[in-house]
Image 1 (cartoon, rainbow, N blue to C red):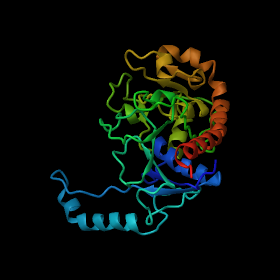
Image 2 (cartoon, rainbow, N blue to C red; image 1 turned 90 degrees about the vertical axis):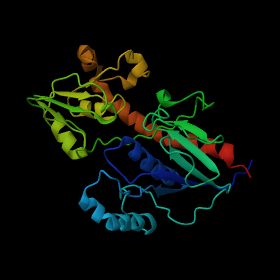
Image 3 (cartoon, helix red, strand yellow; image 1 turned 90 degrees about the horizontal axis):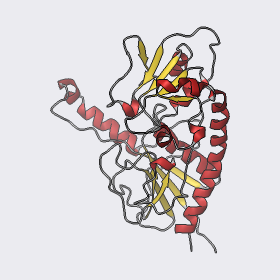
Length: 312
């Protein structure tokens, strides 16, 4: 069977080191190119709107904000990219309804903005979790970042795992081997959950750079996450913290994380700290193994897409 050469377009927001999903999209484009496929980023810039709640100054500056939007959207520039990743940007020349182009949307994107015939929907979280709505096409092909994000009612393929991991062990590592004290914590996707620990003497890490986060993690004894699905919990372990995820009511430890290796080093609640400490030494090797398997995951993804849409 001969296959036509495909072009992949990864639809993504500008690079943001504080968003695991955005980093995964950019890294996927990089890995596709490194595996000798042809892949581009289509950067999604949101058009600014004037609302009644905005200040007078922001309304006055609206023309400048609008100019910036159109400039970034239509002028070739490195803005929004990570210069260490092989992610060429596509702005023009996206042909609609042709067979040799595949667009990859994260699950938060509604519909098919680029109107490309072949659509891959990458479930980086549970469908509808962030937006409250699901608007996908009938012919979309689904892949999932983790098994727990898959929705069997819309995806018939339980082997469509596409797990891209970029371990930032250049930043997250233990540098403090002496005394530690205090608590740092993150809300992120758990920002609407009830805070159950004393925040008066705790450091909130949301919005800080990777370097700032790693520095604080090397000073504190405990890291608490209200986001149940963030790699910062593993990063905290690499930095020497006792890492704790606040449980969700009615969700068991195995339901939270079905794979045992993803539980290593992370306490599911304060009563689980002693057990987590027994496996913290395994976290680094698990992360590096998963990172190595990312290349295999991308290779399987490419082969599957060619099988489904690449036939001549």
